[in-house]
Amino acid sequence: MAAPCAEDPSLERHFKGHRDAVTCVDFSINTKQLASGSMDSCLMVWHMKPQSRAYRFTGHKDAITCVNFSPSGHLLASGSRDKTVRIWVPNVKGESTAFRAHTATVRSVHFCSDGQSFVTASDDKTVKVWATHRQKFLFSLSQHINWVRCAKFSPDGRLIVSASDDKTVKLWDKNSRECVHSYCEHGGFVTYVDFHPSGTCIAAAGMDNTVKVWDVRTHRLLQHYQLHSAAVNGLSFHPSGNYLITASSDSTLKILDLMEGRLLYTLHGHQGPATTVAFSRTGEYFASGGSDEQPEVDFPGPPGRGRSVESVQSQPQEPVSVPQTLTSTLEHIVGQLDVLTQTVSILEQRLTLTEDKLKQCLENQQLIMQRATP
Image 1 (cartoon, one colour):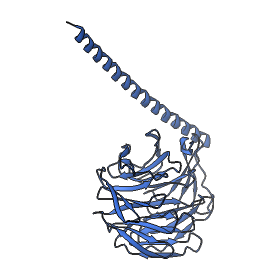
Image 2 (image 1 turned 90 degrees about the vertical axis):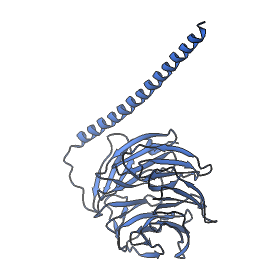
Image 3 (image 1 turned 135 degrees about the vertical axis):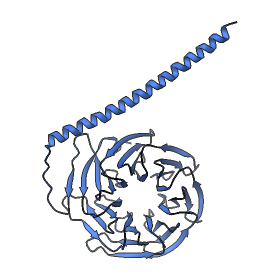
Image 4 (image 1 turned 60 degrees about the vertical axis):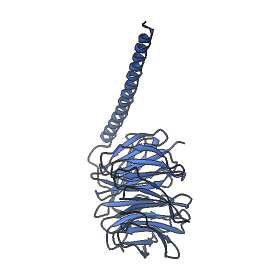
């Protein structure tokens, strides 16, 4: 299936408004809104339509660590270091309801696909499940022995996966509330985990600079990527299931082709650690946030045609000092250099393979000659 990120991704837009590092981003179902949370304790909802005003929601008493739109897009959940979860109506009023049960920082929040419940993860070492509309805490999952960084529902809502600083990823049965399996292959804290859109596998990111993909039916490790030079802080599957994007403290984003098991693109946009990344529900866009205090939205397009738009609510764009033709030419050159680098890498791999085969042939020939000698 053809996916947008098979073409060169290019920067579409900066959103400026947060006063501190951006910790989390999420798109609404129709991609009309983008939510971002920050260390500045504010939740912002940005409209994808250029020059539209953004909503700034206040209510949390400390840094916001996670955001997630409900499947319908009518609600928005956020978690915070203030130990609470808030459910917001993402409109101009910005009304919210606080949910309290965790005894430490809430690191993750995620709605079930039916929108009737949501799951949270916390530094209190628990995963908790809540009823959305009844505004009620339902139950805890408590086998992790260190902070729980992330928890997600499976697409069908039957399973929950969680990632922890105890270096494990745990798979839970929602109905029995039992741990089905623990994945222990990470060499450090596990920072993020999510289900593949098919629900058949999971991908986890770690402080050991790796991304691992497991089959949740056989619990077999399917793929292992060690491409970043620092901790991997977040990841997101493309809706097609064919691509995975990662965000790292090495300040880069990487797009992986899961069908071929290889790196497609490395994106250099952030000035500091990239803390979060998310594909839109349609797969048309992806957004990333970092310690440079602004979420960025990228969209796939041909080399040299990317454009950067900076907007603070409805203020006009600042004039660009570099001529657009020069910018396009430079971007095209960079794109061609990337292609050249990839080509050289492939040629080196093929040369190594040829050398190995030649060496094997010579060894086999020597063996035959030795056996033929009386």
